[in-house]
Amino acid sequence: MHRWLVAIWVATMFFIAAGAASAAENDEAVYEQRMELYKKAEAVSLIPWYYFAAIDQYERNIRQVRRDLPKPTGVLGIYIKPEQWAGPLNQNPHDTNPFTISQFGGLGTDGDGDGVARADDDDDVIMAIARYLQTYGIDHRHIKIALWNYYQRAKTVDLILGKAKIYKKYQTLQLDEHVFPLPLRSNYSYRDTWGDARGWGGRRIHEGTDIFAGYGVPVRSTCYGIVELKGWNKYGGWRVGIRDINNTYHYFAHLNGFAPGLREGQIVEPGTVIGSVGSSGYGPPGTAGKFPPHLHYGMYKDNGYTEWSFDPYPHLKAWERAERQRQKRR
Image (cartoon, rainbow, N blue to C red; front, side, top):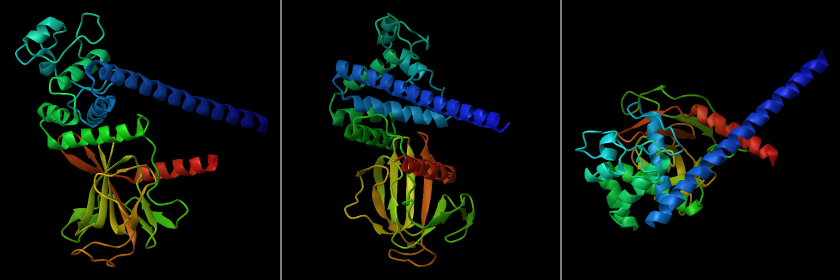
């Protein structure tokens, strides 16, 4: 009986490992397909591939969190509204004829030479975006203008250009790794405190997880991203905000101080030290010591219209567990 249980356990572990390997291979294939499309657009338009990657990543993220947008059906996340695709005066919003679409000033185009311009075809979509950007110019300044005219939202333009900056530096799409915000070797404790009541400065909910540790414990970036904010806040004290490639804003508050040379606009990666644990906040600049030292870690999602807080605790647990596993494998 014991041998049968061992055999079943071994077989189960084998299938789990095989499933994980298969998922990793599928993810790798999707990244390769996306990069092939970005490079194709780059070759035709002379616009660097990372701009297309940034637009695609931004659109994919907002489609995942909004109900008013259809979910992607291909490997790209870019969604062009029917009236934009077919042309604002086109009586057929689902027109696939490249000629009539062009007559009505639509963005739709035939990107793969099959004579049809389909808004759900990845080749057609990426070439439509490439031609749109190209009409403004191929340098950074003109691409920024094109993005503003397309999205009509400064925050969206900043998010896309931030992603492009990250992709340009690392020259890869695979930037999904995360780490726990404190070194695992340090002495810390935390529980799920998101949504708890807070009274200082008025009744409000706690938008984050408190990780208690000693003064001076290093605080690390949990992700690939850009330092969007650095400075003082009467609630959070010395704090840092980092925007990742998934439109998520990572908020680190109550710091004891910042890492030397840390600046807004700086690209960081998982493990980059950005400051240290403290007890700053709840008063004017320099106020500290009103509570035990801890890191307040919050996460906020942008959906193209607004931004809201969500519970970081499950993510912290997952990142902590994954980092321990990586350390064991080493």
